[in-house]
Amino acid sequence: MKKISLEETKDALLRSGYLLEHRIEDLLRQKAYYVEANEAYPDPESGKSRELDIYAIGALKAGPEERDYIFPVLLVECVNNPQPIAFLTKDPMVPFLHCEDIRVAGLPAKMPGERGNVSWDALPSYLAMDKYHHYCKGRVATQFCSFVEKKRQQNVSEWMATHEDSHFDSFHKLASAVDHFSTEHFENWRFGGQESVNVEFFYPVLIVQGDLIDVRHGRKSLRVRPTNHIQYRMSMVTSGRKQKIHQIDVVTEQYFPRYLKLIDEEIAKTARLLRRRHAAVRNAIDKIVRNAKRFRTPAKIRTAMEP
Image (tube, rainbow, N blue to C red):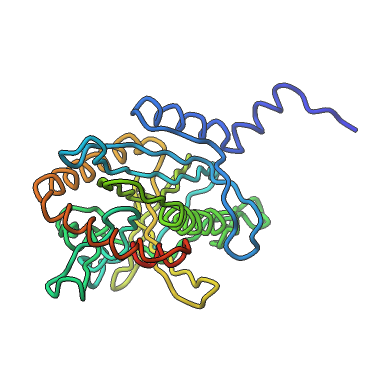
């Protein structure tokens, strides 16, 4: 059996994306995120353990109390794509409704609506995050493909668009990870004394080392151009046959520092709004806690706390 050489080992690692993952991990640590690489979580269908490339969490003060914080949570998959990944993008019909796809977990994940205890608004809607969150701006994609080279004919290359299973698997992992970690945050809650602001905002992101292509369908032809950031909307049916939309950011490695700045701006704006409305936020927390304390099972407590 032939033994792999050191140079071949290096080339294989470069192609695999392992080094990309380590570079992203180092950058997140420099930006004061707490980072866990290869974070395990259960697959929602099989129950078997799966690994996410990177789990990273930051923190920002969001109220007058000592422990009032909100937390941006980045769930990251890294891909070294030798061929471009192309996304067919379009202008969304109702971009403000994408506010409903901002995933949050914790206290308060919702606020009393106009009818008080009878109705509740999800926290992103209450804060009107559609005015400043990037999910509610720009074009979105629901289709993607990559490319493989077919057999050469007379030394001429012919390329075929295809749906890479590895890319679909990465999106599926990100969507499943969001569901798992948001549910876990609710179900692991243990009520103590006075509860504080403690909300996690989830950002699933696929980071690619190769090229991203934005494909736009014109009246007579396709317009194709390179890009650094795509918003991909993925429809996923859970085991309970409930359809759920996950919005996933796809960014190049070069763009990722700017992406982090975008998140910082959104989280800072959210923290300012929560601080300004602290009395209403405090009232919401107290109402949610009183209701949730009536239950004993994690699932029922989660139902009482989530939007």
